[in-house]
Length: 116
Image 1 (tube, rainbow, N blue to C red):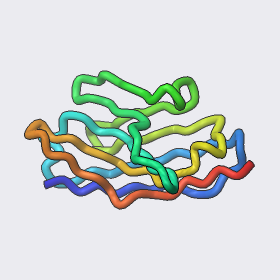
Image 2: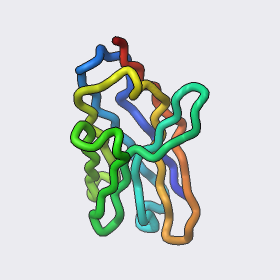
Image 3: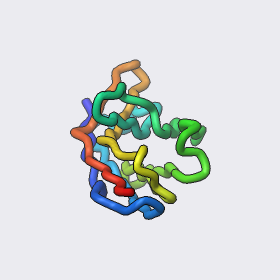
Image 4: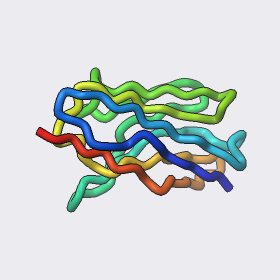
């Protein structure tokens, strides 16, 4: 089992920046992919960015060039640097970990609100 705890959400004006962090604990050695999803009100949850154990990174088209995902294996953390934020980035952001077994885990989420 893996536990994920997010931090760093908040309220920011359009054009501003926020940095989200996720601390993983438990069976972290079994994590294959780790990253971020988001869910805006009334919409489906969507992938934002993910990084594999081998370092491969994938971003949603809507955040390419603005968001950067990184991880610190020694500290079992993954971060999401979000720049040039837009009102449409407003959502609850969830840390997600996919184990090599195929089981996925989701954090409790952190709210990001971008005002226009």
